[in-house]
Structures are given as C-alpha cells and as structure tokens.
Length: 258
Ligand code: TMP
Image (cartoon, rainbow, N blue to C red; front, side):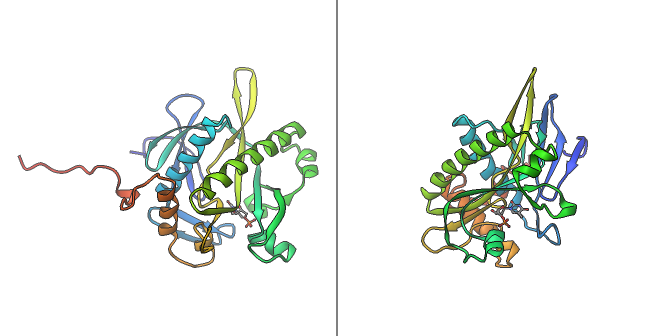
C-alpha cells in the first residue's frame, strides 16, 4: 500500500509521504520509540496507532476552537492527511509542573508546581541535541521573526489552557508538553499553524490520584506498560472503548468458503 508513494522524509517516530493533492502531506505514525536523541531505541507495537488517534482527537478539538493546525483528516488508524507547512525549527516546551530536564537543570523536585506556566524554546537540531535557546537567538539567527514568536507564544498559552482542562476532566495532570509550529502559505498570505503531533510521546501526563506516569517517560525510564498507559489515555478521552485493541479495530477480511 505505502510502497508506491513518494516518501518526503523519515523521522524518528513518523514518515511523511506526498499527499494526494498539492499542498498536502500524509503523516504515518510508526511504532518506533526513541529517547535521549535516539541513543535509546525500541519498537513498541501499537504505539503509532494510539498516538495517531490521540493526536487526531486533540487537533480536531483545537481546529474547532479556532486554533489553526495543519491537520485535515485521518486516512486510517496510522495515517493522517495534513497541510504542507514550512516547519519552524523550534521545539516549544510548555511547563506547568517541574519535571524532566527543567527539574534537573534547576535542581527542583519533580512534581513541584511552577509559579506560573513557563514556555521554553529549543533549536530543532539532532546533531546538537536540540539545545535550549532564547528569543534573542531565534531572532538573531532568523529562525522566526519577533511577530512569529508572539503568535507562537499566544497559541501555546491557549493550547496549554485547553489541554490542561481537557486532561483534568479525565483525571490526568498535564505536567508539560512539546509542540511545533509551521508556516502555512495560502495565496499571498502566510500564517502560523500548529503542526507535528500532540500525544503521550510529546506530553508528560500523570494520573491525578496516583501520580502514575501515562506518557513516554515509561519508555525513557524503563518502567514498562507504555501501550497500556497510552490505551488508558485514549479510553479516558473516549477515543477507544474499554476492550478495544486499537491496532485490531479494523474489520478483517474473512475468506469465504463458497
Ligand atoms: P524535557 O523535560 O526532557 O525537556 O521534556 C519536556 C517535554 O517535551 C516533555 O513533555 C517531553 C517532551 N519532549 C519531546 O516531545 N521531545 C523531545 O525530544 C524532548 C527532549 C522532550
């Protein structure tokens, strides 16, 4: 099925193919998991499908709220059609509670509430290990213009407000997350839209009652139970039903004897 398509790019967790119309791209969510700049690797069966479905749900809700995204529609459980954008080479991290690299960098105990939500920028460059940068670096090197940084920060705050409420309603604390933005060119206009994905691969999600991790830290920290945790997130969001195995959700072709 996928072999005839033109592959544009293969990343660590996703493959991009040319879409059916100009200006569109097909995103294929792989089961590959990486951490620490791909020093740690594994294939986790079912992860890609869960991330696609969770990201589809969140991007649809954001589109409905008037927060522009690249998402058009899902094509199947593992793939989605998106608008082609020029990716801004920044990883935008929004944090509500200290964890991960912030906890390490500032010597904070994981789980400490932050005085307010904090936005950080990292320069998307695997060879350099995605170093943290300031607005000064971003504008000096021309990765984004000051007005674009403003748009990105406003959208990031709105996305954080929406996601925090969405997850709180299903018993999950949104500790932090990483998003990416792109430039969408339409006619003579350009606007910044949310791109990439929002999934348990790119968020830290803790169960409100138990503080159990329901995100990729289960892989980063060798805790096991990643697919079960992502499934629980999908179930609580109402995306999959209690007993559904998402990777088996498609009807199977049954050979007829007649
Ligand atoms: P950090 O604490 O390791 O900097 O991660 C902050 C958030 O960003 C966390 O939710 C995980 C997410 N993240 C990614 O999505 N991709 C990455 O490459 C890294 C380092 C973090």
